[in-house]
Image 1: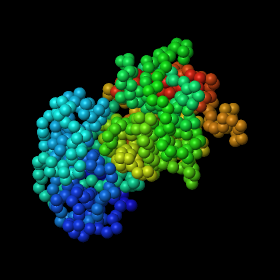
Image 2: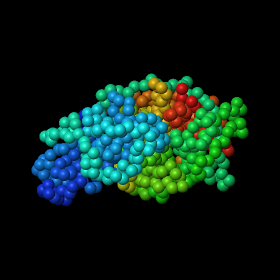
Image 3: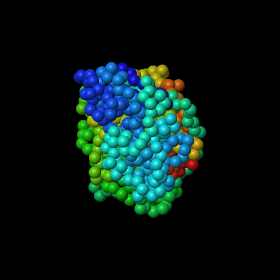
Image 4: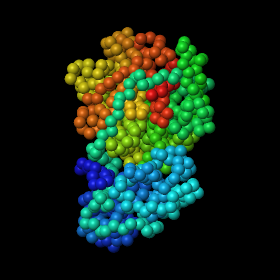
Length: 606
């Protein structure tokens, strides 16, 4: 399989792959109207209609019309060259809104490539829901001429996304729905007729992001920028199988609890409960309180919005032993019509040849009574122990600049350094591979952070091992988030950090036949949040730094805030974290802090 790269004209085409057809078409007359076609020996895809071919300006345009590339027909080179280029495909009407960078107006896309200015936030919300502002794509100025401007949408009754989607079923119908600007038949693509979209393989070769014309740089957030607001309790279950022994994954949902009190803590949290089953529940967020004596009775208790449900859909059944899980909400991406909960599942041992070595990622709906889970997918080419735990979102502008629009980050730290001797980060975009991708799809990642694994170069035996500073095999990084506030940002990990000596055995010292609590230990183990500079991750994405070179620039000791402190040596002092980017709140699970229940701690990021 050949390596493919992003093709840059005015727009960026997609590096994709179509399996070769068994026999190429030899004449134009054999091509059905309304087909996707490609030249034999090439992977560039066009839309064919009425004896002409049309170019997809970019990936997002293509995925408003199609979920994948199964229907692509292969034609002989002389056949393709005889079909004139007629112009560009425009967005499918009613799927997403668009704008250009030089104009603040947001437009709904109507039939025939007609743009209709949506003149208020209220109208946009009525048409596209509360996530309307995440359903807007920038159209490069050079392609704005492919559209015509129609009447504005002054009230929601002026335009129906569902109705126009139903009326315009394919690109050919959209072309003739209303007059569109014509373009000459160019010999080669020009700025108004860019290089075509190429389909993505289910197991692609690495795709390198195009270097951004300008960089996005932010000042570093410091621990002093996080102001502690207090903690709150979680609902208890009569059978002890709810939040008890939970707290391994958490995500913030901005549209949750819409009828809740106007107390400043808007939205809701989804999280995982008991570690035996990792079911998911949704809670409303109460006002956190600070208890001077760290008495949990002083704290407010969250209420349940959706009870615990198994969202695995039977897809991860082989995973049973010390399960690891990640959870992250994203609004609709690609051709999706609704936001999703993204899932990552793994376990302690997933060795080569075992049934536990399996794909790690999936997504499901927000309605836990009908999760409709879809998956499962590999993170292509990476160590399974490095990718199947925490998930978090990447700011859209940064993702567009450095990682080809991949706004979902995944990673894992596994004790003993099997995942890498420090935390890892990979940027992925499953929605680019279908809605949903077929089971077994290999999602191409962009590596942002990865230290040497102990398989390759164990820090216990080699001073040349490339690790996080002050590394211990007993470290556990269980949560991650991309924090931002104004012009400051940081990528943070929450976990338990070892100090002094470390060893494999039990709490008392090295041993191989320990009766209980066998694992990696240190003389002292404290809860921490560590801070990474997003500019370092951008340098990795651009190839200017190696993935093991970024190091934390700051550390926040969590000891003053945590309620549980039974001994100096305790594993898993903290669990997952989640960030409310809209209101600037960071949420953190402290496991087993309220009897068997976790507590949720809250900081305001100033």
